[in-house]
Length: 140
Image (tube, rainbow, N blue to C red; front, side, top):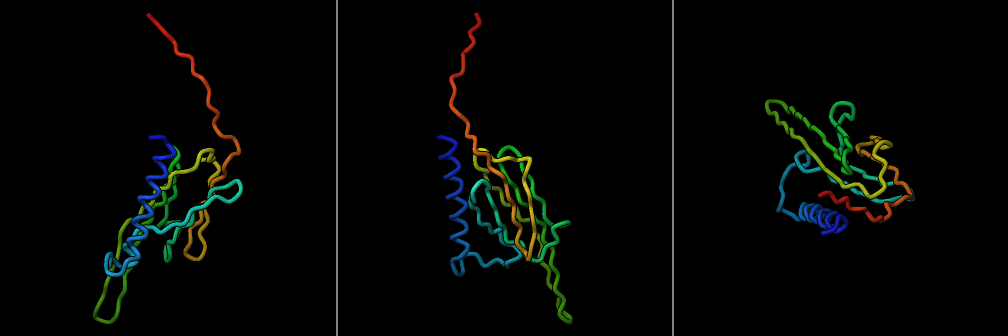
């Protein structure tokens, strides 16, 4: 299987969970316990990932990492509600990994958090890896 086919298969598998989450009654988890919902697209010379992470403090609760062609968004959610004699809390760690496109500049990633949306921008170089013949060394 080629790398491109592998990426497409992984992306389709992730999209299946996004689709299934929308079915009524199938996943009755509170919003605070669901996975990180994202949208991803290429815009000119950059790859953009937007993640829904409302109610979090980006300095304390959100971590963005890039390594080996994979963007990882991790968030820790702690929410407590007190209503008179009753209290309720939700907590958990949410993680989402996205494969970066070929040519992604991992050293120039920028992340911004505005109104509950984390936007991660990754520059993409116009250069694509060219195929080349590799000489095989032979030793006896």
